[in-house]
Image 1 (tube, rainbow, N blue to C red):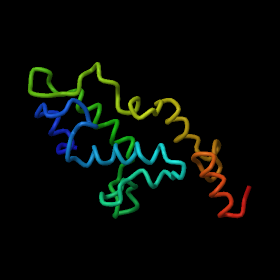
Image 2: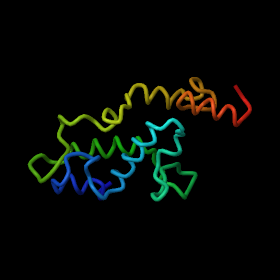
Image 3: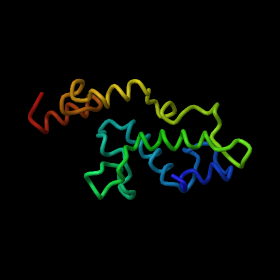
Length: 137
């Protein structure tokens, strides 16, 4: 996160999306691209060339969730000392807002996933395709 926030501290960027040449910018751009695609799965929200976020049980992943990392980086960037070089402006919309993710909706989906979606979640066309592949309706 220190490296991801360097362009903000150096006043080279005003937000995470404009932090050129950082992994967080790449993850945000990939997320945006994937979230607008018709054939999306949650796992595809991460660029293949970067280590994926995952869980403590998988030592091949970063033990963190992508959206939690984005929110924590955004929050951290807003709390730099305003008298020092750079910070994300308090007036700047939060990263989850900019990505069109409502916090309450996201938390509800995460906390009650199985109740809401059974085994699969996604765009209607992607769900139909997945159901067809698994011989379900």
